Length: 311
Image (cartoon, rainbow, N blue to C red; front, side, top):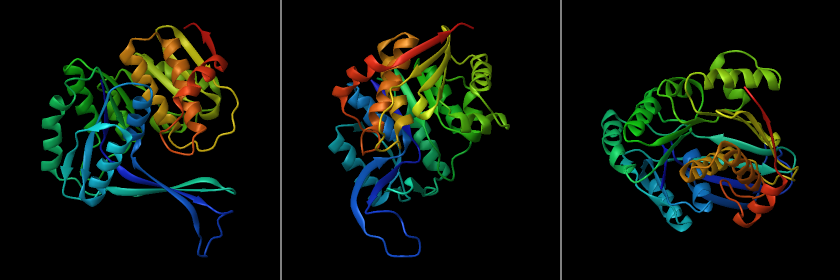
């Protein structure tokens, strides 16, 4: 089983617009798609579509929290959340022909010290039947920047493999607990190292530096260009076929879900990377976030190239 952790869950609302946005006017929305959101819940849906048993956990509250759990029930994703007094946030993704995707992300309600301690106390019991635990995204007000460090430490103590996908100080602190896999993009690498990173070799150099800290798999997502992985087999690059993307939101989360499935199955690095890139590409072909057609994965795998260089 795979457990996904989402500390800043949300109701994700995708607005599909007629024509392009005209600022300062009343705009009609052509269609709306609501989903249980937050990066970790996108991961949960992706891992479920990969055929794995998944348990989603984290913090939810209020009427939105109940709605979120109901949507996960519809998705067939099991869940065990700690409930808080505040209201789960909403996030809006506006999709129009002129600008593509524009996201408005609410910060999330305040979490009390007692609510945090209740989650930390329950966490070992929640993850006991899982081999892989993923931790994704931002955290709401009230949670410390080292919360992922504490959760990774607890998961590793329980013998679990951990994937961490976050940014900024949350990533910096989380690295101290040495997760199994991290998946920053170039912007997140620049934020982590506090400097501009230019060119593929510079990215690889920074990824190697992170690998040198003891992290077994350092995966750098490259958007439409696929992903790099630095691991025991050297430097691998998974290159997807060119596709007409419908919605790129959630591609990174789908990649994490696929890596969690591959880690659970004990796959070797190259097979893991190819599969992760295939699932992320499939997500780009779907109008919904953290969603894809499982039957196209086989065809995409045949078209993905994998380059390798030692060291």
